[in-house]
Image (cartoon, rainbow, N blue to C red; front, side):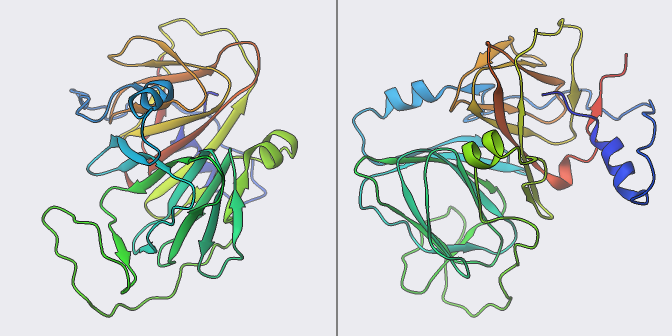
Length: 299
C-alpha cells in the first residue's frame, strides 16, 4: 500500500521509455510549518456504519464528508428505487463515483448505457452530460468525488440546485466532450482488479483530479516512526476491500473498513498499510495541481 514518491515518478515519466527509472534521491521538501487543520465536515475518518445509522430512516439522502476548498469534495449519495438524477455536466474536470450498494443505470453522452453495481468505479470526463437511474429494488448508495471549484451545468429542462453566491442563467457555451482516450467509462473492481489483475494506477486522470486503486496483501503494521509521505495538497481514500491501517499526522492511528472514507489535509505525514488477514484495497484521490510535491519520509 506504500507508494514511491510522486516526484520520483514524475522524473521517470520525463525520461525516455527505454531508460531505467532514476535512482531515488533525497532532498529538502517544503513541508508547511503548520499543517492544515480538520475543518467540518472533514475528519480523519467517516465510518460508513455511522452514516448508515444516522440515515437509517431515509431512503434517499446525501452527505458531504470531505470538502477541500481548493481540492476535492467527496459526497455519499443514496437514491431510492426509481429515482432519476438530474442531467448535468462539469465543464472543467472529471467526476467519478464508486457504487457501494444497489444498481444504477448510467447514461453518459457518447457511451452505451450500462448497469453499475457494488465496486464499480464510474468516471465522466468534462463537458459530457450524464445522469443515473436507480434500477434496483433497494436504494442505491454511491460515493461521488468532484473538484470542489468545478460546479455543474444543467440541461435547459432541469431546475439547477441553488449554489450560494451563484445565479444560474440560460446561456450558450462552446466545447466538445472531452474524450476518454485510454481511460474507461467504468471499472468493475471484482472483475477487472481482483480477478483480472488490472493495474489500478492512473484510472482517473485529468488536469485537476487523479485517482488510483491500490490493492495489496495483509502485512504487519510498521513502527510509528515510519511516517510515510506528505503532499502539498490533500488526499482522500475510500476503502473498497478488507481492512486498512492508517497513521495520519496529528490523529490517532486507526483501522478503516470497507466503505469508510479517510482524509488527510494538506501537509500531513500519512501512511496506510493493509491490515487484517486478507487483501485490502482503496481508491485514493488527489487534486493534481496540489499533489506534485509528495515525498517519502527522509530518515
